[in-house]
Every structure is written in C-alpha cells, then in structure tokens.
Length: 134
Image 1 (tube, one colour):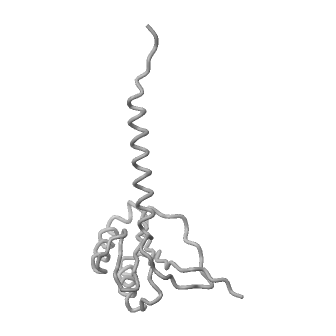
Image 2 (cartoon, rainbow, N blue to C red):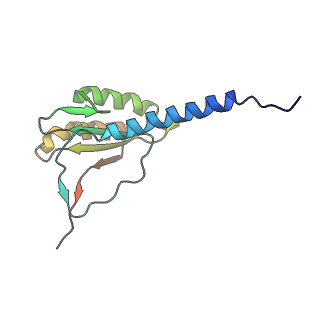
C-alpha cells in the first residue's frame, strides 16, 4: 500500500483565497466607479498606497453622495465616521478621500470636512486630475 495525501484542506484554502481576492478586487473598483468630472490641479500630489481605513466619498454633479458606491446622505456618512473614529486607536488612523464633481460648490463639502476635524481625522484628500504647468 502506497503513501497518499489528503489534499482536500489545501483545495479549501485555495478556494477561500480566490473568493477573498475576488471580493477585495470588487470593493476596490467600486470605490471610484461613480463618474465625476474631477477638478484640475497643478500642484497635485499622489495619494499614498491605499490604507485599510480609507473612506472614499463621492459627490456627483447632481449633488448625490456616494459611499462604497451606494447613494447615501451626508449625515449617514458622518455617523459612520463617528463610529469608525471610536475604534481608530486600535485599528489605525482613518483617511477620507473626497471625489467631488467640479460643479459641486465648496459649501457642499465643508460640513463633512468640519466633522472630520471634530473627530480628529487629519488625513483628508481630494481626488484631482494633475495638470502640468506650461
């Protein structure tokens, strides 16, 4: 009688990894899937690598707010940030990335920025298109 290996646990682990990476890829793509015309900036800096605690908030031309590619209200996003800020110490610092259409006035974005400041969220970035200076 020969030596045999039970590879069932190995196959289970491989399938779990495949499912994890498929789900993670979908989430990454869904953060920025809402179409917006981003403002242009001549002194734009690249965002650091994606942090696990990054919140991507999108505001389209119709002033509809999106979080995780789902339409929502600004106050709901603020409540979610309050909850996330409570666990920020053990889970790492929260980062907020705002994707707003060029037609959205600053007065629409300002309340979210004030909420972030009150919660001690210091990493706030705006998604822009880099425009080189002539």
